[in-house]
Image 1 (cartoon, helix red, strand yellow):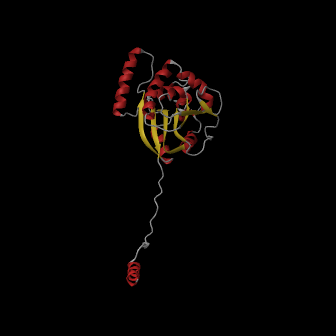
Image 2: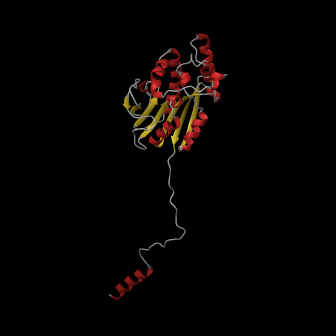
Amino acid sequence: MGRWFTKQGRNDLDQLLPSLQHWFDGELGQELLEQQRILIDQSLALVFGYHCAYIGIADAAQLLANSRIGHHFTICPSANARCGIQQVRCDYGQWALADRSVDAVVLHHALDFCLQPQQLLREASRCVIPGGKVILTGFNPYSGMHMLNRCFPRRRQPLSQGRFISARRIQDWLQLLGYSVDEVSYGAFLPLTSKPSLQLLEQRMTHLGRRWHLPLGGFYVIQATREEQVVTPLRPRWRVPRKRLVTGVAVERNSRRRLVE
């Protein structure tokens, strides 16, 4: 029980990217990524615009292949790991982007391994235009995958070095930042395994979990929209008299003049 509550030193996302990408290149990582790609494609199906920012572990060109947004770029502070598409060099807590400059932001497990997840989410929300989307993927702390990470931290490297945040807390953060949560989807309801006998059971459990919207999957995908702040003008209580173009007196004078002439 001592290992359960011990606080271990954590590295930032930039330092963990090479090992995390190596894990996602494996068999279990590709299986998990395929399940996530299906849910992310469903979230990006109705997202339109010009620019999309991405921070994550998987290759952005592969994960955002079906996106309708034309321009994609990755935010990464250094070149420690491959970023695939166009890259913007800046810190995770201070983006080199103007306010309301992108149409969508996709965060693929960025909050799970970032040392300052609230600051990262704040910067992502700042750069999205009103009506834009934030789509983020995270590991569920209330799942069997997280239990294995806590019980066997050395065997579950590098996933055990993350700090998994619940979907409910992420929704609270988004609402404080002025976002409305559109949808929350879960996947991987059983721990990933390479045994063919358990893969069929895992597919059935995933189908039932998505059908009944059970919040017990290994990961979640949250889609949120930035609400547009509409200013309602205040009307004065007094009534301003309207100006009349033609009055009865003016018409009467003109008629009299014509009669005299």
